[in-house]
Length: 194
Image (cartoon, rainbow, N blue to C red; front, side):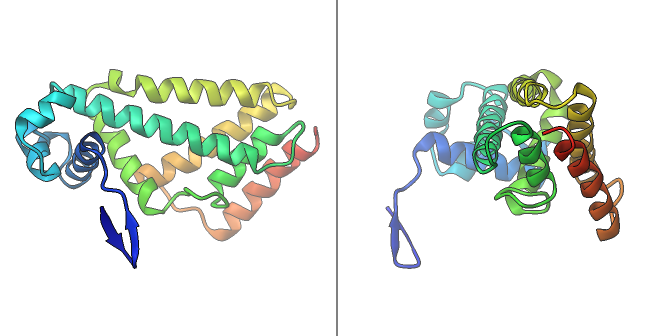
């Protein structure tokens, strides 16, 4: 058990500790810095203990991407549940997420770590992103079934992805005026058809 601010928290299981360690390594040193020995040392487990859960570097990265995909799916579902029911619910959830109104938003620590993992996996082996592709395909399907014209739904999806990619790659930083104008346009697309 761990104590934080007079609250006793359960100690993470070995698999979680290993994935947390792998995430720290990938964020700090990239995939090139990830070895089985480094992961075991960082997680505080023996190499045999590590191999019990993950037999290879690829298995470590797959576990990390599967965990990230599950997190994104969960956040997406929570954001949808926060929106009023009816047409446009999924689109409004996308917008809340992309424009910083949800729990996990661009710029927060979890988002930064997720972005580093995403890029590292993409660079190492694009097939590792298959769990993420499946989640995004499900999110896209939900958006296309959201009661909006297809072009409007795709405009919301593409704009949200564009904001994510701009942040992820540091391509540009939209001004507050840019964000207000973009959000107003996207809201009009959503609300005009709900």
